[in-house]
Image 1: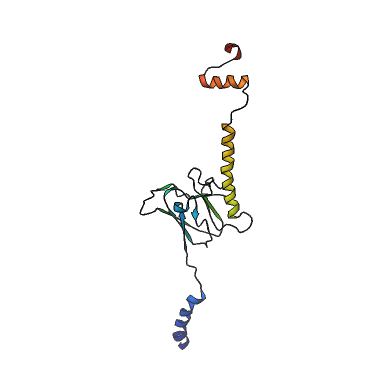
Image 2: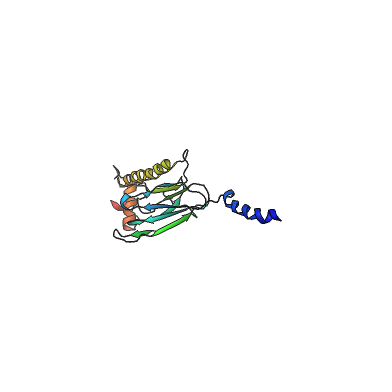
Length: 184
């Protein structure tokens, strides 16, 4: 009886020291603003239960989940903040918060036109080897080059147009079938 009366309270006092509990942390990230088309920081290492809060600065940005293979394409079933327009003189900035559920990597980008291919990408827990954040960033930036190359190929005028291509173009413009006999 003496044991339980005296030592039981002492055992309860020791319990918090033997059972370490993790307190979740909120990682703060600035979206755009004076730093340009970037997330600052662009990489966060978080534990399960942590949060990442995004603070939107001036212009109009999103935080949209993507994948390593398709850095500038929204991940089906992934999160998105939606567009958050902010005036340059705004006193308050909108925020968006996600919860980290495990230690798996989370890739994200801004959906505003040309922002992702300009390097506006972000990651939670990216690997330090293999599919690193740097490789993810390079994949996103390569899309700008690929898109530019595609646009320049479309904008280039062919050196010579064949009779068949010319008739097809005239047919699409007028809406009438054009054959070579009626043109002469």
